[in-house]
Amino acid sequence: MGDSSDSVSIDMETPSLCGKEYVIETCYGHVSVSVYGDQDKPALVTYPDLALNHISCFQGLLFCPEACSLLLHNFCIYHISPPGHELGAATISPDDPLLSVDDLADQIAEVLNYFGLDAVMCMGVTAGAYILTLFAMKYRQRVLGLILISPLCNAPSWTEWLYNKVLSNLLYYYGMCGVVKELLLKRYFSKEARGSAQVPESDAVQACKRLLDERQGLNVWRFLEAINGRQDISNGLRKLLCCSLIFVGENSPFHFESLDMTSELDRRYSALVEVQACGSMVTEEQPHAMLIPMEYFLTGYGMYRPPKLSVSPRSTLSPICISPELLSPESMGLKLKPIKTRISLDV
Image (cartoon, rainbow, N blue to C red; front, side):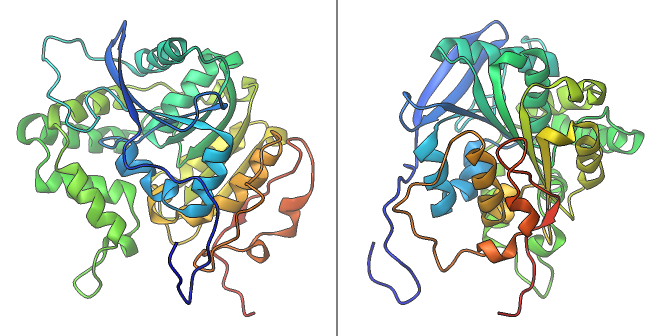
């Protein structure tokens, strides 16, 4: 790394722009998986939100040096794309049957079987968080832990169902048009990040817009139809055998549902992190806010940040931003408390 007055040199593992790509045939059709890292390491499986893939949903987190080093030091990352959401995907044939959320969860099990994976850590965003939670409920022995960002657990409310139906019709008849992109950006990002006449859009929003242009509208429609037909799974959450770490942006449209999900989980094995001034996609809008909670969460599994990694001065987080209660070692080796991760401190 070149010399700079506001940066430090660090030893770390960095992601290449492209992982190793696999196209896997399952009982539910083809699915694309991008693999980053050493496949001899424990597996971290990711699943993105509607209309996204790993580039548009997890790139911000993995381009955060500290978080990237923490994850790639401990895991090989398997990014699963919803059918037809991978880069360069063609439109899925109309003759192919629509998949349900149960089908998508079962498809994950087939992906794990393909790679010979037993128990994995899971990370999902909103719709992807629902799919991975459902997978954890159906295949309890195969999930070590859940890191969920703005997750869903209830059936759609009438308001969400109607909203999704409008979005679904737009996708079906007009594809990824300007109105659809604006509705999706409201789903992902806070109003501050989306900008206004006086304030420009954030870099993350601009990058997401460009990537949405590459999505095939009918493929997104298929995933939306599955998510809009989801069932309430809240009654089964206490039966999960794994620990859960939940992040939710305070400006997320799914903020209330994420809080409701947290209340249904066994509090001995779950924790909530509310991120101020952030929408649903914390991984892109405020990835630094995830670092320290993830680090303490993974400590409970005997996983640590590489010892040679120094904290970047550019990081928005430092240990003093975290409640002291976070450091109490209980349950997972620690006890995470509901915290605010962007606290204004006079130092």
